[in-house]
Image 1: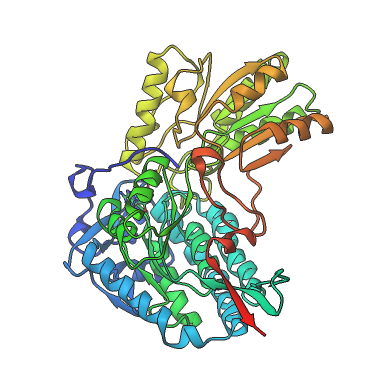
Image 2: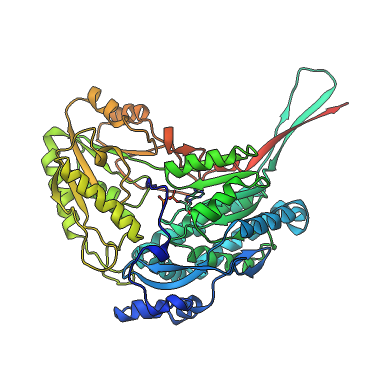
Length: 525
Ligand code: ADP
């Protein structure tokens, strides 16, 4: 994720506000002004006051305050969500604790729990069109992308995890002390605080909730303040699926208030966080009070390496463009450092730049849009600052390099060359559609350069030489290496970071290790 720590309160941002600011928001107004149709059911849903889900009930923030939720395509207000604070977090944690220690969740068999989790996946699929539309409106991504990627992947994660509910097993251990029977139990950790980002709002909620519930935990989830809506809609689906009250609590609000209160809470047993490396460090410090467990999925500056023996150069060029431009570059694993063998450097750079020039920018709800706006004004200014710095430092912009249009938070897809290792655009996570391209000549020089980053989330390697591909994959310090592909995800595949890209893994059965703890039991015979 990107690297900002503090963000201005939206009310203070001075951006264009629609008349809906004083009501509860109205998705109809902004999109229909632009001639884009929204499902009337979604329009009605957006008009309903948004509340937190605590103890199975929809509840306003204790302070009664709300914050504005924006459509990043035109900066209009589409809804208002509870501006929650410590008091709301306290109530949600207390509800999660009650649900964990007693009540139906505790008594539910693993088979029943698995079926319940499967139903959540089914309900997401049944509501996929509406969820995709909501995600597009709130985050800015093309509706069609949300419909084929975010939403089905979120459903699949619940379906995948459902099968594990009955398969979390301990071991019998043949200890060397005579006349004892020893075994292990794998038990839930307890009350889990989950703090998620805005780049894949529903999918990140699924990555977090799926394994936590599968292992029998109870949760307080805080969505990102930029994109709280799909998590609230998911809350409704969780109740419809039959998740008992208090098992999942969803509290919207800002990082510095609601998020900080959750990370520091003494009755939270574990925090699972996805976001920037800077905030990850704040979370670790906040967790020290009660030494709660922590898992982190953080930032990246991932090298995507193309060798001259790649074979199908066009496939590599398309792959490199997808690696950076998918989700507008707002991916922690974005292939933002393109390393190209010198002989093919110009061809690849020009190929990726040609792709970039062809990308059609527009509102996510427009069916012809290929890339939507960045998520927020803050993100636009952050990416713009990097683009400015790169120019100041003397890099060459092959294409892009500027904001696109005057309204909404659009940035031109950008390809940069003639960069030096010390430049901020080479070292830091930009979290926008911006790639820096560097040539290399020798493999011995390539690997140290590729690994010369505080991050270690992902990497790509493009070559037809199978031995070289494996050697490079082994040498790269990254949690995921894609060979002759990029951005391939699956619920069964663990994902997470080396170095400062995180602690632990999301997805796969490995994530369940972070949501269970082992108890050794010894029986004297
Ligand atoms: P991004 O760069 O994707 O915006 P952030 O790390 O800023 O990532 O935010 C990711 C999540 O972390 C959001 O839900 C945000 O509200 C939360 N967050 C931000 N600051 C803090 C903090 N100090 N304590 C806890 N959570 C925070």
